[in-house]
Amino acid sequence: MHTRAALAVALTLALGAPPAAAQVTAIRAGRLIDPATGTAAANQIILVEGEKITAIGGNVAIPAGADVIDLSGLSVLPGLVDTHTHQAMTYKEVPENNVYYLTYILDSTPLRAIQAASNTLQLLNSGFTVIRDVGNNALYADVALRMAIEQGWMPGPTIIPSGPMIGSTGGQFWPTPEMYRQHDIMYPEYIDADSPAEIVRAVRQNLLFGAKTIKLCIDCKPWGYSVDDIKLAISEAAKGGAKVEGHCQTPEGVQRSIDAGIWAIAHGAATPEEHAEMAAKGIFLNSTDTPFTPYRGSETAFERTVASLRDAWEKKVRITFSTDFDYWNDRMKKADGEWMSRGELEINFLLTWKAAGIPAPDILKAMTITGYEEADVIKDGRGPIEVGHYADLIAVAGDPLSDIDALRDVRFVMKDGLVFKQNGVMTPAKGFHPGPVKGWRKR
Ligand SMILES: [Zn+2]
Image (cartoon, rainbow, N blue to C red; front, side):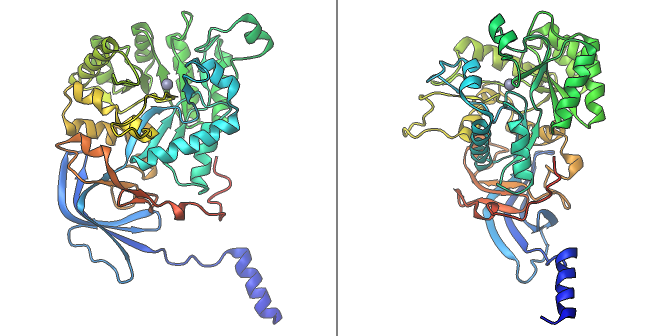
C-alpha cells in the first residue's frame, strides 16, 4: 500500500470513520396513544433515526429509502414500566420450598445474572421498556444486567438497579448466630448498616458499584430506621443522583418515610391518612399488588390489597404498576396448559387494578407516565413518545384506553430504535452482535 494511503487509513482507524447516516424507519400508527392525557390521535407517522424519534405527525413525509413498518391496524403507545422487580431472583417450591434464604445459597451470582437476562427478555416481549430492579440480586447482578443492555450485548428494557438492599442488622433475614457471624449470610443479599457512618458507607458503596437508586429496609426489624437515618440516606444518595425507595411493611415505617421526604414507598402498608399525606408530598407508591390466582395469593390478602390500591387512587397518590415478582411454581399455566412467561405473569397484576375499579386510562398512566417519573428517566429523553426521545414504543391490537386487557397481547416492541418484536413474534436478531461495545466506560 502507498505510504500516504496507508497513513490515511491509519488515521481513519485512529480517529474513527465518519458516522454513516443512520437508517430511517417510518412507523405508520393506526392510533397513537398519549397516556398523559388519555387521548389518541388517528393515522400518525413516527420517524425513527438510529435510536431516536425525529418526527411525529399526521402529515410527516416518509423519506425515500426509509424502512416502513405498518402498524396502521394497531394502537401504538410508549413502553410499560414495572417500578418494583427483582430480575435476578426466582425462588421456587422445588427445591427450596419458597424459602429464599436457600435461593441465595443454591444460586450463584453468575447464574442469577443469566436468569435476569432471560427474565428481562420475557418482560421486553410483554412490552416493559423500563424496570426498576430493587434488591435481592446477589452481588450486583442487577448492575451487570443494566450494563449488558446499555453496552449492547443484548436487547432489554432500561434497568434502574439498586444494588443490594441496605438495612439495619439482619436485613430481611432472621439468621442463626452461626450463619450471621461465621458465614456472613447477610452479604451480598443485604448490606447491614446501623450507625450513620455505616449508612453513608453503604450508600456510597452501592453508588460506586453502579446503583441508580437506593433501596432501604425501613422497618424489616423492630429497630429499623429513624427519620434522621432515612434523611441521611436520601442526602447521600442525592450526591450520586439517586432517589431512595423504602420497603415498608408497617404504617409506622410508612410514616417515618413520609416524614423524611422519601421518593417512593414500596408495598401496601400505608393507612388512608398516610395515602393523603403521600399525595400531598408527591411520594410515589409501589404497592406491589399481588392478584389472587390459582398459583399465588389468598382471597383475604387480595381483598386488603384491592381496598388499599383503591384508596390510594381515590386519594390521588402517584400510584405505579409494581409487581415484586420473584417466584415460580408449576401452577403458573394458561388455560391451554402452556406455561406463562415472566412478562405474562407480571401483566396479570392487572387483575388487582381492575378489581379496584380503577379506570383504564388511569391504569395506563400508572404503567407509563408515572412509572417514567418515578424511574426518573424523562430527563434522559426516555419514556413518552416525543421528538428527540429514545424510540421505545409498543403496539397492541385493541384500545387500552377502554380495555386495559389489550396490553396482554403486545404485537410490536421497539427499544432504542431496534425492532424487538413484530407481528407478535420476537425478532431480536439485530440486538445480538459481538460488537462494537457501546460505551465500555458505562457503569
Ligand atoms: Zn421487593
